[in-house]
Image (cartoon, rainbow, N blue to C red; front, top):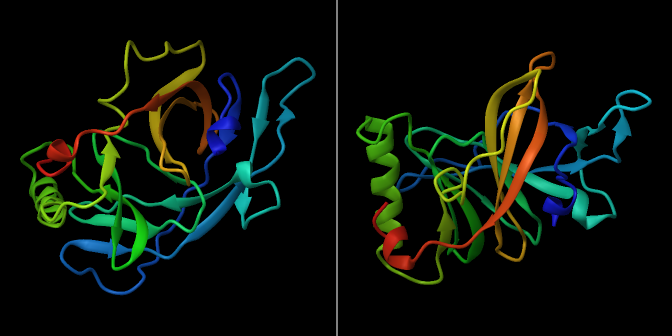
Length: 208
């Protein structure tokens, strides 16, 4: 639901989170503690400027502003259990984001590849995921960067590097959020485009 609040043209502060492991990694899967966040009401940077929103910890009554954060861990499949709340992760550089049931819990995973396909971290993360996915079941997923249809949104004057984020809604929908960094702010990004992405096939997800 938070894709409703990630409006093109607005700015948002995406605070960096420090992941806390929820127990040891097993089979290449690293469960993380649930970091609950919410997007605050937007304000204008100036009288005629674009609107901006900050993000703070905890959940509020408006469900379409709530989400939990999923951190990338190279060489592992980092995961959070999805307790009827959207999940955001990123920035993305080619990793796959997946949704599945593991140990009886609905989970969202970030397959932690690193830079190049033949890097040891990339090989390890894909191997762990593929071993799990081989059993089948209800598995969905997408590649937020490579799944984008059409050209990426163009930069504007004053934009920094582009950053791609992924959203998995509580209903299991997948969204790519294309942003540009603010050259004057550490974690602030301008939302340049959003796109709902369809899940890849099970066969694709079993052979990442």
